[in-house]
Amino acid sequence: MNPLEIVKSPVEIDPDNFELKGSPVVFLNRTLGELADIFLDKNGATLIPSATPVYTVHSWLPVREWTPGGLFFGTSTIMPGKVGNEYFMTKGHFHELADRSEFYWGIQGKGVLILMDRDRNTWGEEVYPGSLHYIGSEIAHRLANTGDDNLVVGACWPSDSGHNYEEIAINGFSARLVEIDGKPVLVPQKNILN
Ligand code: M6P
Ligand code: ZN
Image (cartoon, rainbow, N blue to C red; front, side, top):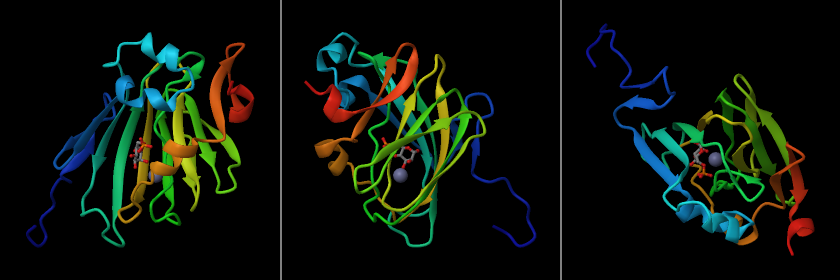
């Protein structure tokens, strides 16, 4: 950059679909085939084509991962849909440096941000255009789409937070977000496991 020059930022949010445009942008597409394990209804998952996208993520990583003091930015788009009666959702994670926090904010659509603390207490926050969510340290976070349209959520997290998926892969969240009588309900995992 030259002194006194006014330039465009290399990355911007596409106002039409809220995806990130520019360079460098990392794109990730999570299909049902690779996520089938996170849903309770394994048989229900086999009824949906495995190539079906459940969510996509566009991320701008302006610094190397693990750089202290930096920030990453992403937009997640969770598609509408259910496996059995469980809403399409993200894998969810704690941070590898577990005291690192994160902001999420609702951009489009509707859903629930599912949060779980280290004592395995799980609760949710409603996500809608304009909703703002502070995810404090040691809190696992997962997004579920409860609407009929795409759920788009912005995220900003520290570049040295990392992702700890293992704990969620092994123990899951202590509650699942399912549709009961047309409404999203958090149901304790032990009560719906056979
Ligand atoms: C947000 C951020 C990212 C995360 C993405 C998808 O954009 O929290 O760090 O990777 O959502 O969520 P997950 O990693 O749980 O699949
Ligand atoms: Zn995170």
